[in-house]
Image 1: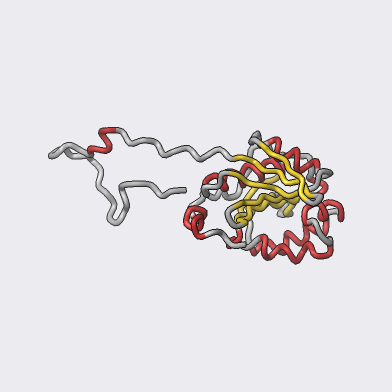
Image 2 (image 1 turned 90 degrees about the vertical axis):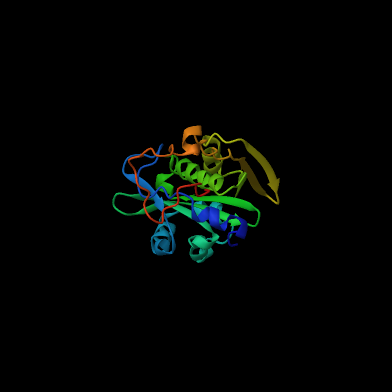
Length: 214
């Protein structure tokens, strides 16, 4: 489902952490934004994943896993973060997916890289993006046997709630609201005194009041 109109402009202004190491990641890997150009690398990761790992992620026939990737990596439906090695292999994907008035998080970590902090690092970035877009909570659909996903969510430190629905474990995480903008000082609000040079000229066309909401 595409991003609701009420969040479209906010999400577009979300900061992109870009390529680089993230707290909690092992050496030799980095997190960056991912999109449609990464479908091929994601399919290669699928080929390296076990059938059990793919089944826990997609909750359906493993043979259909590749078909989901164009939708998941389409920025109209949310945000995606990928973990890549120094050699360029994509070894983990995290998705923040707009679902009407709710927001889903989903993870896939290649078998050889599980239990090494990749899922938690991705979740921290994704929940930060969700909070910046005005979301109050996110949810994950998983299975009780998927202890890695449960552990990754717990490691974020966010308050969690658990519910079972038709054999699926639904984990909801309550997000901390983004910090309010710093108040302007009285002197800044008044502006320079009449007749007093400030030493700075305002660039033409640049907005000098207010801040873009994130």
